[in-house]
Length: 313
Length: 313
Image (cartoon, rainbow over all chains, first blue to last red; front, side):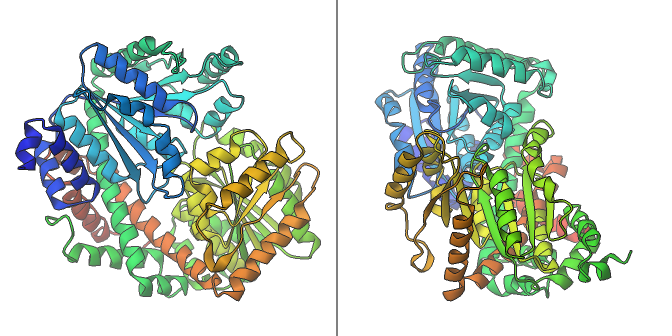
């Protein structure tokens, strides 16, 4: 199979192969991505929130809703790369797999290597690939534990924070600072006790939040993903936010921000990789004979001299 | 005041000043740190766990316990640098401030700039400074949301994961992968309903955890920080872990790892800073004319050429 040609002909197997290239950091993936980047028109929606909030079930319902409109959709599910926990988290996503025969739906799980909870550079590259492939929607779902929320908000057009009526859920989100980065807040499992109270708490808290770009007012929605209740309203709110971004010229800045994120990820990987390899220099720093900055300079200079695995720097 | 001399004479005001240097990335801080590094004998204990688990109250009790033995202690409390949430989190720490007249106790709050939940390089530099100053103990406390747990485990000698009997607390820790990095697990607020059940769940889960270095068995302890119950046993368990590290030659690797972390942080900060500044290059990547790796190479090379604020690379 000529993967590159097949990719441009929108062959799903080629997409799967290309994603593996990108995930493994192979030069073929970088070449393809360079050629494909900037194409596509996907709306990138990030779903974040604590484990157990029902993000996967909600994503499943949103798939149904966008498919009912005839749109195509890709889901990128990011897991912390722990062999110990990986299985448990993937289990939550089995439900979504019922769409696997639908040509308009593409689901991929990725590990967030190197940064538990955060998005790896490879994830953002995969996102660019899914966009370029031509999906109308890309849902980005992570196990929300801190860094991932912030990262999602940096790369998604619309960030949906999913909470539950569980006592403390809102407080925890508030304390972790994630309420500031949400474009929409959803109280899922709204049929559980305490739902209305949490909605009121959230609305009260939002009054203290810093203003959002171009005066966007963060709505608090309610869903019961298990039954599908509220999904349609959620999708409409996502579309309203997208129109808000479009109207105020805020979509392009999001694309630029995604590229910035990818570059920063490459640099970070470079730093970690070289610090891992150079025991001698690290020992010099530990002993106080070299400053971290001096060591950093030498390591990066060395990494830039060395033939890189991307093959084209 | 000659800060450097005063620092070496163990003047607390000089320490406070030096920490500000380090936090602000001033060259004076780097100089002092270079001269002071590798001195000291502190036991570095990381306290991590979800917001509301009672880490600050527990830290407060541990301060009492180590002071009762005549040891000195510094607490480094790391907050996500959110102007929106900062106040709320700091509020939890007010209790500790009652020690401020005790010369053997030093408490400092730092923002984890740039990486919500994660540790900034400046934090690790501050840690090195507190060690060098000669404290017997350094407690490192963060608002546990994802990345911070992993970072703490990388820099602390002993990592204490603080949970509560609240339903889902253990499951959440398990899912987020943080149970793998804990040397000790504490169920705080053990007087709340469900405590014994959570302890049993944790013990069952630990059987599936990957083995810890040199066969260390992770104990599950219980505390009621509010009343002080269990603090003494916790401190004994921390000491037992420290002896385990000492016996198996694992303390030096921790020191090396801290230096490695600092170097990687410097490279990362350098990269993010330059990616923030270089709109032109980022746009080239977004448009597909340059790969992220090519852009990364150019940016870091440029940053290292430029006169750096650390003044000595």
